Image 1 (cartoon, rainbow, N blue to C red):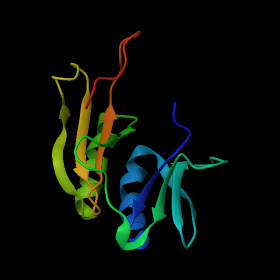
Image 2 (cartoon, helix red, strand yellow):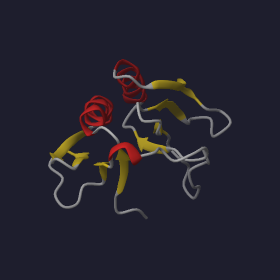
Image 3 (cartoon, rainbow, N blue to C red):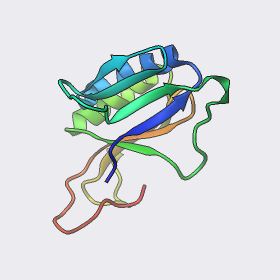
Image 4 (cartoon, rainbow, N blue to C red):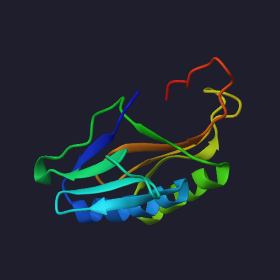
Length: 136
C-alpha cells in the first residue's frame, strides 16, 4: 500500500545516529545522507528509499497519540536487538520484547519512542492466511 514514509526531525544528526542503531538489527541500512535527509532500506535497494528522515528544524513534531510506526523484524532476536539498540541510543521503553497475546498468540513485538517522540514498534508475526494485521 505505501510507497515510502518520512518523518520530520529537528536534528538530523541525532536522528540518523538513533536510526542507524535501531535499523541494523532489522536488516536495514542507511542508503543515503544529504544535508536535508537520511534514507533507509534493505542493503542494495535502488530507487526512492522506503523510509526517510527529513530535517524540519525546530518546527518538527512527532504525531500525537494513536500514531506509531511498526517495522517488520526477521526474528524474535531481531526484535530484542532493536529494543536494546533503541534504549542504548537514547530511546524510551514503551513495552519490552515479548508476545502480545491480546493481538495474537504469536505476535512478538517491542515498543519504543525515539528521541524526537515518534512511537516505534518492531514486530515478528506470522499472520494466518486470510487475516490482516491486528491493530496496535
